[in-house]
Length: 71
Image (cartoon, rainbow, N blue to C red):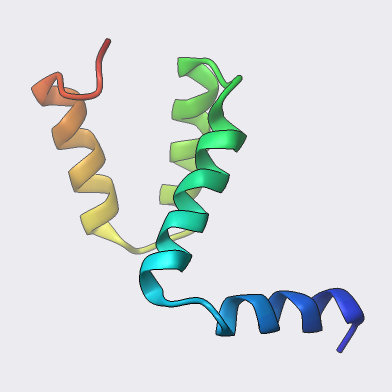
């Protein structure tokens, strides 16, 4: 295991689930800050292609259809 992998594992293992969720949410917000809607949808389609998590897909699409994510 590399030093970076050890650091990551140590950091993640030391976090509570709440802290880990907040860390991921902040990281995603930073990543998506400059992404336009088209690129965001492309990112979403990549995630859907590489996961079998239908709940993720359904929740996102339902939110879009309901207008809760449209500005």
